[in-house]
Length: 461
Image (tube, rainbow, N blue to C red; front, side, top):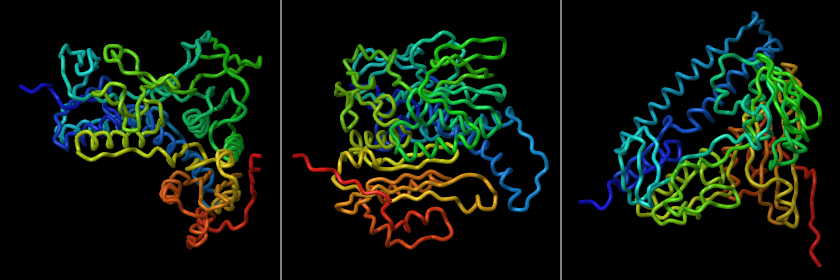
């Protein structure tokens, strides 16, 4: 008899877990993957994919408004929220089925149930079945975190519930200043809702380049979004179908919906980890892993948001693939977490890769900044009051491009390709030597010639 029932047991059917299961099965491993909710995980079911669909939908109002400048007369447009949500649900159901089918085609077995550890190699399913595995991969992701308990917290929705609202809120208060908060603020504003964004810090998008933070805030405010920084939500009262959000600065806001998007925490609770000895990283609350996603227990690995390293879907997928290749594919693959391009699907979009200006100045003796802020060609006809920001952060000693930051339409698509160049250690001279594509916004990246700022760090005595 075999020592274990399966070679690999994966807990979590999200993007990272599914990739690991498929690749491991392709290497000949006997694989079982358990998902208690829906295959596809946060990204597919209630994250990146449905959010992007709503971004597309909300942006149509901008296109209709811009059309007049190009000679189009469009009759009064109408929007139906239930139709959008129903169509979104059909697409997500299709993707969920595809995820399940692709895993099963690889030879892995899918079990739609919860799995809990009973030891380093043993798992108990909610169905009552017990399974032993040579290796276990934890890929349970994360969950919204509402922070400290406040009066009225039961009235708050998260990024989980927002996709299933029965109707479009006319007024919504959103607390948060990161990806999710900004994206939904812009989504609802695009549908015509009155949006107020609350953030405790001095400005939104903490951790991003300062010019990006300032530019995005300006653009969002131009689009009618009220942004209140330096305060938090203290309590929430309900009066029939209306909510009153009381802020720490003493003011209050009436709305039809209140949403918190202030962070996510790793889904490590109730997994039975105490029976395994798996260590939790005290700095971030996620499962502690090394560069090969190994935990403190030799038979157990963890990838993606449950480790709370870099919480992005492509990172989880890359980590899952690398794990499967390393453990079952007879080749050692270590994931490089540097130079990860990322995008915020606000309106306008943000695309960024590499170091911010602040980070570069702390690490390099001479930093050159190339920056442009211009009105896009489309806006010259549409009349829309919007501007594009592009910025290159360059090592003044070696000419290497350390970071690139873009705010404007198409920023996400641009930064994916620029990410390749930055990872390959492209120089500013390489940018300068590349022929421009005209007329585009992206051509500005290869035509900026003037240093807009130079920072020289004084040598320590």
